[in-house]
Length: 399
Image (cartoon, rainbow, N blue to C red):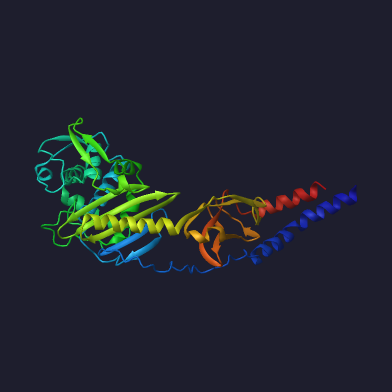
């Protein structure tokens, strides 16, 4: 008995020395490095579409991947496609609670003076935000676009300033907005590229209300007394078309930002500077057909992983998971996608919830498609000297 007590007492007295050697081992240990594989994805081979327009682009909306482009960075007059940005700012104002769909907007003299496509608002006339948004989306109403801008920002000039600021925030490099509706008789440099139109269109269609309105063929306002007909004929005649916005002036030619979805693949097709409406619609149809025929969206749901060992933590393991992953892939390659979980055998504490501790790498025929982060889903604190001493003390005393 006395001998066992002396052994335990000796262990207690020696435990600080063992503690320092343990901490030294922690300092020498390293996390297993994650392989750094360069993203060397090549663009699909150029096709021979040669669309009859000044500029065009086809983008997958959820990923921003460009599938086709033709002179996509030249800044050109966009006509009423301008209203994509106007609508985006209005929807963001609704989303933030600044304005509401049932708010009543009073038409100013300036808004009532707008020409071109309109719903013939009169000075002092009141209409709900919802009916005005619907009128802009479906009938491309210039007067309603201006009235909404004034309601959101106080004046068209202030709203236009915000349009240009928002364009910069979205990474749009060519856009210069001078008004809210795209009328360009007196505009000096109201221009934007097809690429930038695709960027702002992808942002706008995140709002379900916009897709609800832009897919309507015919509707009414003013208690059914005034009819609205969609300026985008693709909504009626193209399978999967969900919107979005047409435009035409003598300076801009015929333009469109058309959105369509099939089997989870969401495409934004922009055509600028076509000579006629029919040529514009034919070019958009051809480009969308090409996109749906050649591409698919690949999705892989995130998963929880087996617990990962933790060195120097208040617990020995940490739970982890990886995020959902999606990418656009050539249809012929969807069955050849593979993935590899790249994660260290151990991680060093402390570990915080949300910390990246590895990656899932997706490849096709040896070429990387993208990665999903592996994240810790709980906190593991770093063990302190006193905690280690107590652990060792408890281990020896309980023997």
